[in-house]
Each structure stands twice: as C-alpha cells, then as structure tokens.
Length: 171
Image 1 (cartoon, rainbow, N blue to C red):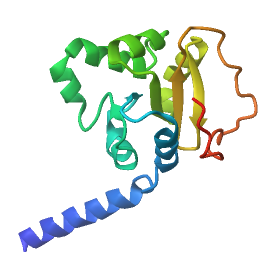
Image 2: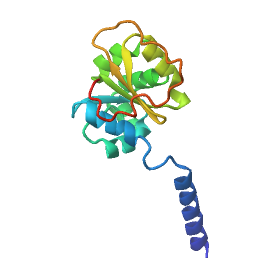
Image 3: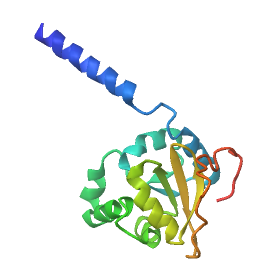
C-alpha cells in the first residue's frame, strides 16, 4: 500500500510538472532560424545552461557553450564558469569581446525572460551586437566584427522581429 501511494504521488507530481512546463515547440522557431542562418559547427553562446536540451533537439548543427548541467563548465574551468555567470546575469557591462575571445562565439541565443534583461541591455548598448532574430520565446544576437554605434532602440514593442521570414539568410 505504501509503495502504491508513493508511486501515485510520483506520477501525480510528474504529470503536474509536465503540464506546467513550456510548450514542446518552445525555441523551435529560433532554432530553425539558427539552422538556416548560422553556418553549421559555429559556437553559440547560450545564456542558460538549461536551454540546451531544446536547443540541441531543434538544432544539433551548432555547438553550445553550456548544457545539461552548469557544473560541467565549473569543473572544467572555474574562472570561465564565473565569467559565464557574470555575463549572463548582466554584471559584465561589455560582454562582446569576452564572449568572442574567451568562449569563441560570435552568436548568442537567449530566452526572452526578465532574467536576461540586464544582459540584453548591456550587450545591445555596448555597440558590439545586433539582434538578428526575435520572437516571443527567444532572441539571437550576432557579435559585430568591430564595435560601433548601438542599434536603435525598438520603440514599437515589436516582439516578432525576424520570425516572419524564415528564408532570410543575412546575419
């Protein structure tokens, strides 16, 4: 009887977790854009390690900075892991050169949650990045070859830039 109750409780919790999770196609459009517009094999700086399973499922053609568990990066290189955290939380005001030089990436993938507002603000204001794709779930940034003027701020609140033209091959 106790085993049956424990099993029921576990199934109930799992069903509840699945029901409350993001839809199965979360990131599908952004990953499709990356597959069509970023050369295969390129390193992508993803701002959340736990985005990796969906990214890899929808786009296995790219290499991602962090995935499965953040302790892998921490165990391999504690200094780089701390830098990753500093960049993704927005503590680093000029992340472009660090993402390029320390992580070997010129592309950034991020969900559009408020967790990354500081990162986005710093990255776009730095003059190093262009937002090349955006939908309601995620954004892709491209690191410029040279620092220049920041892109104009989006005053329209357009939350589906880049999402309507899946054939656009421009970075």
